Structure formats: C-alpha cells, structure tokens
Amino acid sequence: MRAKTSRLYKKAMHSYCISFNFRTPYQILLDSSFCKLATEQRLNLQQDLQTVLCNPTRPMVTECVIQELHKTGDHRAATVAKSFERRKCKHHLPVTSQQCILELIGSNNDNNYVIATQNDIIRKQIHDIPGVPVLRVKNGMIILEPLSKVTKDAILQKEKEKTLPSSAEAQQLKIAKLVQKPPTEPVHKKRKVKGANPLSMKKKKKQSPPPPKKQKNQGNKKNKNTNNDKTTTNTTSKTGEKRKRSSDDTKDS
Ligand SMILES: [Zn+2]
Image 1 (cartoon, rainbow, N blue to C red):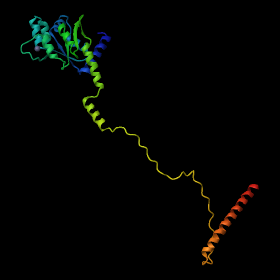
Image 2 (image 1 turned 180 degrees about the vertical axis):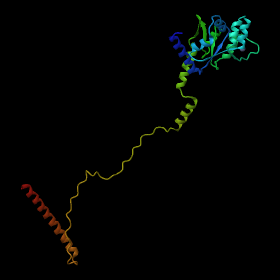
Image 3 (image 1 turned 180 degrees about the horizontal axis):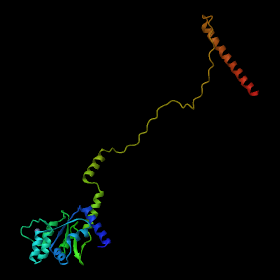
Image 4 (image 1 turned 30 degrees about the vertical axis):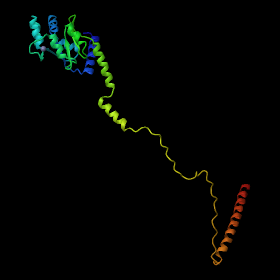
C-alpha cells in the first residue's frame, strides 16, 4: 500500500473515530461475497485488514454468512469464514447475508461496524446510512471506500453541534441571564467636602508676640490693658518699621 493511500485511510478512520466514536480494534463484519473473493485471491485477511486500517482489527462473521457460503458450494471460503469471530444475529433460521448484515447495521450503525462486502446492493444501501466504513477487494487488494456524502454531511453537522452549547449549558446560560441585572447608569461618587482650596487661602499675617504683662497696679487692669494693647500696636508698627529699615540698610550695604 502506498504511503499516500495509507494517509488517506488513516484520515478517513480518524473522522469515523472523532464523529462516530469508532474504537480500535475495529469490528469488521464480512459478508459471503467478500469471504468468497478474498479466499479466491488468497488474501491473508487477518493481516491485510490491519494493514489497510492501520490499526488492530476484529474480523467477524454471522452464522447466516457461513450458511450461505455452504449453500453456494463455497466450502473453502466457509472454512476461512469459520476461523473468524462469530457475531450473533437474531436469525434462528438463516437468512441471506445481505439481509443479515443490513439488519445488524440498522439505521445508525450503533455498534460501529466496518462492513467488508462485494455486494453492490449492500454498498448502495450503506451509502445512505451515516458512519459506515466500507471495505472491498479491488485488483487483488483490500481498499477502503471514501466517505459517502451522507457521512460527510453528518460529520459537518456534528462539528456544528459541538460549537453550540449543550442543553445543560443552554439551561445554565438562561439562568445566568435571569440572574444578571440590567445594566444601570454609572453612579457618580459624591466628592467629600474638604474645605477651601489651601492654595486659594491667604496667608495669615504673623502676629508679634504679646509684651510681658506688668505685675503692678492690678486694679486698673482693663484700662491699662487697653493702653498696653495700643502701645503694643504702636511698638509693633515701630518695630516693623525698624525691621524694614534694617533690611533696607542691609540691602544698601
Ligand atoms: Zn443472521
């Protein structure tokens, strides 16, 4: 098998694994037509099936398939088919392998069978069921048929569903929306009144220290105090003048 073909088969089986939960070892259901041709062409089915699917496989047949091979006189193929795992079917009286296999697949291929068949009727019917890989013998080799349109559409649909929230997640989102409050207008915080801007305040004039109080003549305290105040203001003004002069003097000097 070419490397390119191997990559294609790997990719196809990966799609079946991702989208339809196929797991290794792959269960391969062989019908009578496939067993017959594979035996005629002396294929080593156990080995070749693993090579094609690049993974361990479990080839299996039903009692109906074996009985059909005996009926058609393909006893050698029946002997080969008996060497594989037996898959139980619900038929007490054997039916055609076509009917038996289609019933096992059902409408969804829930058991994830890979179908190995040369029967065109089975192949056509399988193409309408999503997620059924089909193997057949061509030019002395086993090949994996490309994904059918129905399977491709189902894969796309499943990928879309994966991006959407599940029912549980949707329920949670609903609850979250109910709990979430409607957006309100932003609340402006009131500024605290911190008093006048210190930069705009005028500096208080420095008051000169009061002169020492005189201890004598306490009876005329009020009048004297007023006099004292006057005198102090005079003295301060004088001292202010004196200080100004002194600073002027220093500037001149
Ligand atoms: Zn059956």
